[in-house]
Structures are given as C-alpha cells and as structure tokens.
Length: 280
Image 1 (cartoon, rainbow, N blue to C red):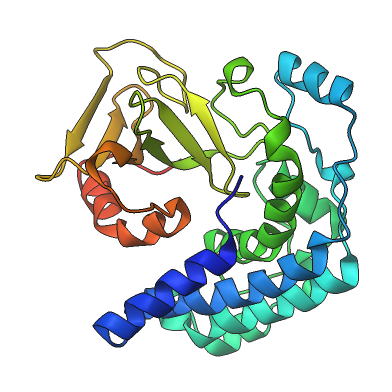
Image 2: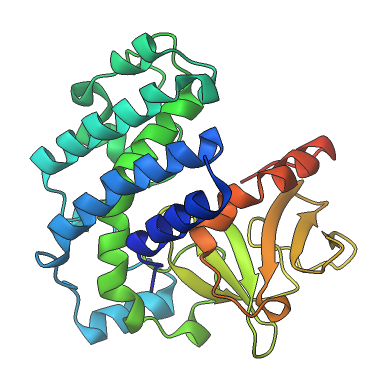
C-alpha cells in the first residue's frame, strides 16, 4: 500500500525540528504534500474498488493495469480546486523551476484539466502541441498535472493494492495505474527488488536483473554504482541509457519512506545525468 502522505509530512516536520529550516526544494514538497493530504482525506471514504476479484485477476493475468483513465473517479470541482492550490505552491517556488510567479499563476484549469489533455497525460503520451500555454515549459506543465492528479491516483491505489498478486505481475509498469517507476528498493528478506510508481506510489515486485524500461536482461548492458555505505544504488542500462535510483533496505534499521527518497537523493540524479543517462 502506498506510504501515507501524513507520514511523510510528519517526517519532514521532525526533520525541520531537528535540523532547522528545510532546504527550499523540501519546503516546496512539504507544501505540496499538505494540499494532497487534504484531497486524499476528502476522497478516502468515497472510493470503492469498483472491480470484482475475477475482473482483477483477469487484468493481472493479461498485464492490464487495474484503472484506465475512463475508470478514474474524478470529482471535477475538487480536481479544479486542487489544481489551483497546486499551481499556487509551484508559483510560490517558481525559481526552483526557472519560471516566474506570473507565468505559473496564469495557467488555466480550463486548459490543462480538459478531459482529453488529462487522458493524454495519463496514457503517457506527449501533451498536444496545441495547448495554448505561453512561456511555461511542457515538462513543468507535466509536473503540475502530475501533482494535481496524484492524490486521486494514490487514493485509488490504496483501495486496490491489496488485491495485487505480486508474483503474477512483474512488469515494468504499475499494476494499478500503468505509471512508470522512478525509484526502487531491495527488501530486507531476500534483497528482492520492488519498484515505486512515479504517479500513485504503488510498490510492486520486479526482477533484479532486468531493466524495467527497455526490458533487456543482457548483463553486458546492466550495472550499478553504490555509495560508500552501500545504502543507495544507481542502476544504469547501457541499452536505453536510463537509470533507476534504489535503496537497499538491508542496510538500514529505520523505516524507509520511499516517496521522499526521491527528493533526498537528487544528487544521484545529477551524477547519472553527468554520465549521460536520463530519467524515464
């Protein structure tokens, strides 16, 4: 089940109490989490799994994620108000994204939350070039849509994760929403690898010796680097030139909150990109 958003908020509050002011990028993340947490609380009691056990098993066997875009229970007024709050958080930290408060504040929910635009984003296609947004990078627009949609996706994931038979999935995309992984962990029992969905924070089991992006199992193409403590690993694929950050849970006794590890390991992203690799 995805890590509770409120647990991550508490972690950041404790970090701030111990270490003083948080770095700017963690302040941004903290504010975003507060918005997303409020939305999740609004949705929790209203969502139902919506699929029978038989339908779930059929999709798992066929490699079909459990939620298509048309099956998402989207409360459009809530989605719009979430967008406005998310946009305000991004605008308040515009310098992090090489943008300006004015440019981000001008973004319109009518434009970016159009049903076809969201469906295109959800199905991992490039946003249409005709979107009338000036002076804001498409990558940043994707991030704002992502942050707006995330509490809706994680809320669905919490209702469905327990129905996933991990041994029968083992694919390079999320069994819940079809999103791509952007982080991974090695578990404490056998060092098995679990991928983390970049969209709904679902974790699922995957092969250690396979690239989740291009699926190569050629060991000449796959390797990893590790830090001095052996806690973090940077897996790289020479075939598709992509990388995956990973934490080895066997090297720590404390609880690991994978979603925040994305932010605590930003230096690994820098190192990977300096070596010519790119995030998925």
